Amino acid sequence: MSASVYLRRRCINLAALVLSGCATALGLAFLAWILWVTLKNGLGAIGPRLFTKITAYGEQGGLANAIIGSLIMDAMALLICAPIGILAGTYLAEYAHRSRLGATIRFLNDILLSAPSIVLGLFVYVIVVLPMSNLTGGAYSFSGVAGAVALALIGLPVIVRTTDEMLQLVPTTLREATLSLGIPQWKMTVQVLMRAAASGIVTGVLLALARLAGETAPLLFTAFGNNFMTLHPLDKMESLPVAIYQYTNDPNPSLHAIAWAGALLIALFVLLLSLATRMLFSRNKVHHD
Image 1 (cartoon, rainbow, N blue to C red):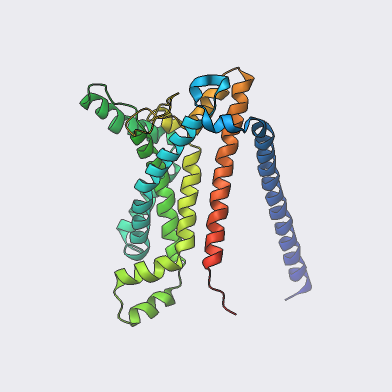
Image 2 (cartoon, rainbow, N blue to C red):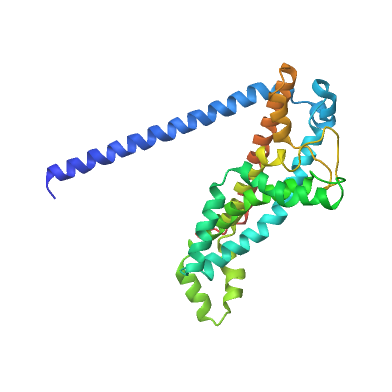
């Protein structure tokens, strides 16, 4: 290799490292800025009233009903989309890896992954909210169940894609070694491959949960919102993103502070959940000396 070729490659490598480092620093700077602004504006409104009073009290109230509503709808959404997404991703990775059907499902999943959330909200409004209103004579229409279905449609493609990719990252030699022992494929998939990719699959579920926690548009067309506390899944249900959206549209600065506090709660919830999961997997990790 000539000296000129070597020097040119060193320069290209150095330029790539500098540009990638600058891009990383820029992204981290904006992330730190967003977190600092959210913390500065939301920390002052954090207090007992935020967790004990409902939004019906306005500027003298809190976000208790919105917090409970978000937890209920996110939990219902995960119960719907997590099992379906993990099973679908497993099917794509292990049974339809190179088939035309698998390629078609991946293509449709990518479309659903990039679909605007408001479109999914309108879809659930048409197939769930309107039929429910017609069947019950208007007694039930907007509901927490409809909101959970909309959120499940948003989280489903994330879990499918992550599960598919994580299982494909498991070495082929592990599959060959397992099958050589006479173990059926379904048992290999459940007891070996899914255990090997468990951390990645759980990360995909957490990514879906992080996206669900901040969705507003689909809930406006499905759960609608409720200024009072409700635990019934067929009632209109408040959520943190909808409460934040409503409070930011109000000119009252006190409501703006509560909205910032709600945004801070969402950020802290996702952060603490991610840290707890990482600690759990690092504690259960097997170390080879």
